[in-house]
Length: 444
Ligand code: GUN
Ligand code: ZN
Image (cartoon, helix red, strand yellow):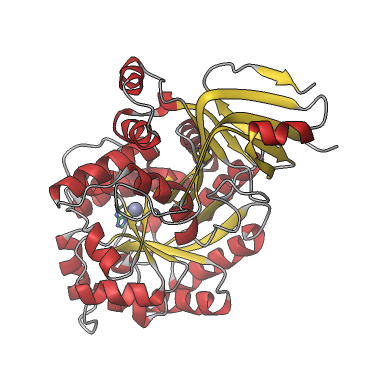
């Protein structure tokens, strides 16, 4: 039996990077005012004008009526810690103290399967409620925190990347592994989960200060043998962190050189933050094809600094967008875009709605090398979607009444929107979150 239905609404997606200008690059935006997506068995079977598709639809096909709403590819979060959900909004510290006072004690709780299961489910409920359908997720150093996360994601049919934190020093004993033990656990998890349904494995050395040279070297060895794995870590987030890395690795000419030395900087590598990079580091990252996850709510919340998006672009460096919860204050892509816009304003490089929504969708999919599967509204692509209501709140409705321009509607959503603007979220061709009942009809 095939699983098939039609979604009708205004389609908005990207075919390419729209650039930084107020007007998107020609051919970069897909916008169909009265559009339709025909979903079959988890994929987009056909996409186009409703009136063009209508004559080809089988009688009896269920049609979900999202007219007046915007249908976009599901949002992607390239760097987030599911295990930090419950320490969001912890007061008053910057990175290294925040890790010691809030983060590490919380992560200790994930030795217990029941706790990990509860938080994994709550995290996925929240991410779907804000329209995020794929994330690259930090677990803890406990393998059970990864097993429970992947189990929960698989049950919901989601495309997710995740991995076990590797750290064998400078952290509480209850959280540290060993160079060989951490790799053995990672290899077991890779064998169990990588490539299973829609799941992929991300090697996850926490950051240079919490790994020995032996551990970093062993991670590089795994990556060399399995270049289809992802890798994520943190880089140049906080001045105190950078000084500490210089003390711990005096042989390295800069922070990035630590990761380079062990073969960790490649096209499937994501480094969160990258706020205090030199031009040389940006260029080297660009040459390696790695991406920096810009985490604006976290960078502001932890007082880490202002990320210079323009300098990265000029170096040819891939930038992705991420929440970095629980350092971040908002799982919602809207929250990330709003903070990115505000940071951009302070640096004289405001983010357009075109660029912002491109990054949340196709841009992030490209950064993670997942664009063959997700990130766009194209035939054959996986049916992960978010349905936005540009009139979801009284304020948004007042704003929307002033304009019919798509970029203005999107910009209002990015500044005023939150989970209330997410009418529904679809993953793998199925509705996985819905705010209000929506009319459905049968095609006759
Ligand atoms: N650097 C090392 N670990 C972390 C973490 O959990 N969050 C953030 N924001 N930075 C880190
Ligand atoms: Zn992080």
